[in-house]
View 1 (spheres, rainbow over the protein chains, first blue to last red):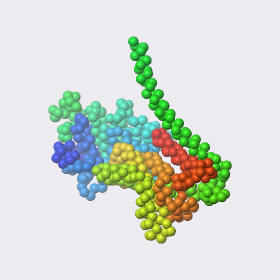
View 2: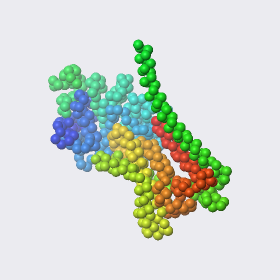
View 3: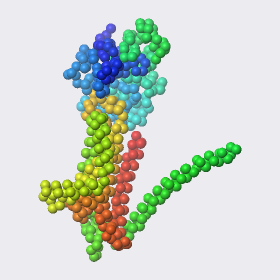
View 4: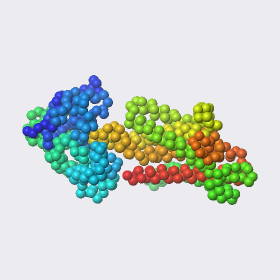
Length: 254
Length: 296
């Protein structure tokens, strides 16, 4: 077993004081250069958990988080951690494609520019490499200055992936990245996710069990804020240890 | 009898449509009539003076003999108050809008928005009154001016007047920038400030431009404030503390004293045409921006 990139230790989260916790005592390791899928029914906490990993929940007013999230052994919730540099190391792709209202080129260059890259030649290289790695280059290389909104939904999502990997993160979080896409576009994103795990550590939240089975090395099953079971994907889908996991993957509920 | 039933339905379908069309057409008709009237009453001035004399003449003595119809000081006055008030109000309004959408907590922003709306309802005569009784004496004493009724005074009041327009409309377009784009920016490691200036503001830029132009238009067309606070001297302003006489205040002040059909009367209507032309240009600009926004 290779080294854990992310280690989560008894993480709990509640959205406001007194509310029942949205996440309860979750402990989980995520291996480097692997693809982990979080599955579970709507409202089970899988997206909330994902957003803990790059501290996107910080924006929610009144949220309370306890426990630790270690990235390469360092707690991302430690007081001396710079959240912006954490988010550069842990990139994110969202449920719906959310390109900026800029050109394709400017979308990809946004992150590197934040990091202070001004050189046009260097930026051009980053844009090309990121678009190649997200499988979009051949489709857009002749119209990099076209508006991002002129792309199809699937292309927009791959542009968002290119934008996320342009800052060379170490971990890529994908929050139901195909839920707004048609089957063809979904297949391309899945194929891409499998490619990306060679370079990055990829975590994908999905409501689609077949997707988890198709793409992931490891699967974690969430239910009502609890991590019920996690392990190698083949094991979770063939010989689940917990009755609830079995009920969910066999379609008895969810 | 399906035929009769159908006929009744057709009638009930057609009648409202005709009524609405008629009402709409009469509205358009009134507008066209006003336009024609303005042209008909304004154009005859060209018999007394050439376009060059009107636009480039520096002397506005419409009742001397022979009368002099140089409108340049009035046009300059209008442009000056519009420019200075816009320079004062637009950055302020956009900053206020940014504060309301991006910085201040929701509960407080609601209170601010209501205050802004109330400010927008303020009758301009009240503003003019404040300009005469508060700002003018203050400017006069502090800056040792001959009169506190001047370009600066009127521009400050106009700025206050258009601020709610600019701020409210800018706020709407900032608000329309999807949260998901802010999230994308944060997820790339951008700070709040970077997100505000590099994603939200550019995303709302067209709406803000429109808000600014609408503010400029209101400023240009406003009459009461400039009539009361601008000083009323038909001179080319050399500093922001010189008195001016914008087109609107000239028309309002002089129309009552002219005899119908005189050169002066036609000259005032011609000023109306000039104002109309300015607002028309600004309107076209707004429509241009709108259609570009839709294209994206």
